[in-house]
Amino acid sequence: MAPPTPLNATPHLLQFLRTLHSQSLTQEAKLDWPSLPEKCTDAFDDIMRDKFVALDQDKCELVYHILRSINATTVVEAGTSFGVSTIYLALAVAENARREASASVKGRVIATEKEPSKASEAQKNWERAGAEIEGIIDLRLGDLRETLAKDLGVVDFLLLDIWAPLAEPTLKLVQPHLRPGAVIMVDNTIKAASTYEALFAHVDAPESPFRRVTLPYEGGLDMIVYQGRP
Ligand SMILES: C[S@@+](CC[C@H](N)C(=O)[O-])C[C@H]1O[C@@H](n2cnc3c(N)ncnc32)[C@H](O)[C@@H]1O
Image (cartoon, rainbow, N blue to C red; front, side):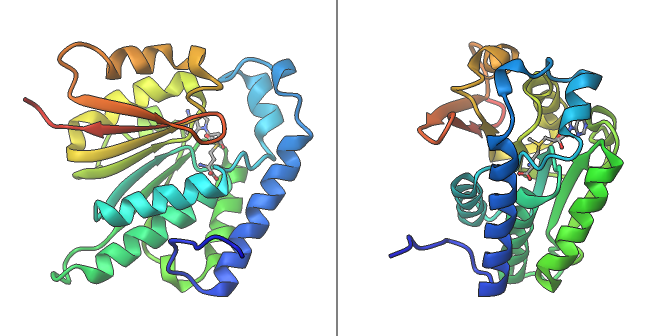
C-alpha cells in the first residue's frame, strides 16, 4: 500500500506532481555530477538551464507538513527552477491562509529564479497545478541577492534549494525578517557538506540564534530553527 501523503490536494494534482518528480529524476540520472563544472559558473548554468533538479518528493512532502504545523503564511523559496517545490509551498500556505480566522491574512510564497526560461516553465506548471495556488506565488525574476533585498514582510519559512555557495548569503539576507520559530530547510547537506561550510559556520556560531539538525533523507536535509534574538 502506498504511504499516506500529508497533502490536501486533488488526485489529479497529486498525479501531476508525481509526473514532474519523475521527469526531474530521469534528467538527473543522466547527469554525471562529479564531472560538472563548478556551481555558480556560466558553464554550470548552461547545463542546468533545461533541468528541473527538483527537490525530492519525500522532502517536498516533509516541507509541506512542516509549513502546515508552523502555520506558515509567508514563505521564501531560494531556487525555484520549474516550480515543483513551489507548488507544495503554495498548497500549504493556501491551506493555512484559508484556516486563518482573519480574512485579511493572505498567504504568500516568494519564489526566486534567475533564468527567464525556467521561470516561464514554472509559471506554466503553476497554471496546470490549478486554481488552488492562484494568487499565492510572488515570482521574482533575477539574482536573488537583489530580488530578495526588499518587500519580504515577516517570514515564517525559508527553503534553501539553491546552489550551495548562495545558501549563506541568502540566509543572511532573509535573517532580519525571520520570526522567532521560523524554519529553514537546506537540501543536500551531507552529500555537499564541504560546499556548505560558510552556512554551517554562520548557523553554528557561538551565540547564534539558530539550531539545526540533519535529517537522514537522501543526501542529507537540514532543518534549522530560528530562535529569535536572545
Ligand atoms: C535546485 S534548483 C531549485 C529546484 C526547485 N526548488 C524545485 O524543487 O523544483 C536551483 C535553482 O536556483 C536557480 N538559481 C541559481 N542561482 C540563482 C540566483 N543567483 N538567483 C536566483 N536563482 C538562482 C537555478 O537557476 C536553479 O533553477
